[in-house]
Length: 443
Image (cartoon, rainbow, N blue to C red; front, side, top):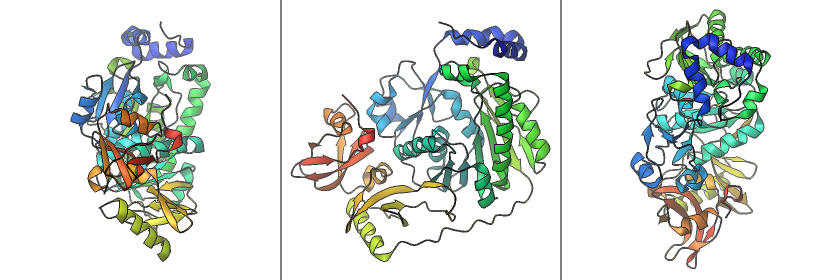
């Protein structure tokens, strides 16, 4: 059944696309396109291809992205829970391809929830450097944090603060900044009826004003010669090319760079890329700027230290569970964190989490946390139970049940096809399950 679209939206798209409008409209009689993106931090493409019940068909928008069937049940696949892949609409990966993040860089994803683009950045950088993921809406920031944890990202900061606050404190700090701005969501119409219900020309104009303000704050965070990418999942000129033109008028210290990509089509009158449903994705727009003027940075390095007693407990526990070097620890109330390699001072920035949650202090000991194992590779864990993806013990583990663990002792990782998906404590031939209650499968 064709999707019923607002008449004013149809009029706008007919004027925009001309002879291509009927091809555009026909796409709404088909199911929305779905995709997955490989997470090379945890899994290789051969393992993913071997364990999924559908063939991997490459998407043009990212070297890590593939199309998925419309009826694929992502949460039913064990490697999804292990963080081996992320479920993502195919063209949504295009913006990070334009950003072109590099290992070792400091990168800000300013409007990051639910985490698709942040986890893509971490994958492309090999989780080396610093990824700062911000989301203003606190409930959405919690979802962002959960997805970054599932994908095993270590060197990250998750914050929930307005963009102008970050701009004030971290001006000139980042090598690259991504603004995947809140928009009218026209590219989501085929898969989200709520986006259709909320659409109006007035809403489009409101979004454009907000987008320009967010982009202005983001610009302050970019160092000299740094890159700023602006993207939306909408089609309107006001929110796309219109925002780009207004930003360039207000910020002469930036120039627009022509996208070096082969997917999609050129934007209208500015260097940028547009993707319509007939181009292989639901819809996206992206433009890439470069700062060509100096921008001083006043950020100072993180300098807080853990008290010696807690530090000793944390290092002893880490050595008992893992074989690599832990890096820096921090304590926030009863939580112990493993911090990123690079970090500025964090006070006053609405931090939800820095790095990986390592454990929780309980009386005179520390209980390890799920996040520390999700960020680990099997070869760095001292004890690992390896399971095949269709082993019934794996589903039992994901349901929170105890499983057989003959020959194992102490904190033990559980890995599916070589990808860590959680842990438990082995004793007496069984594994006491530590898989978080909120993540457990039902049935």
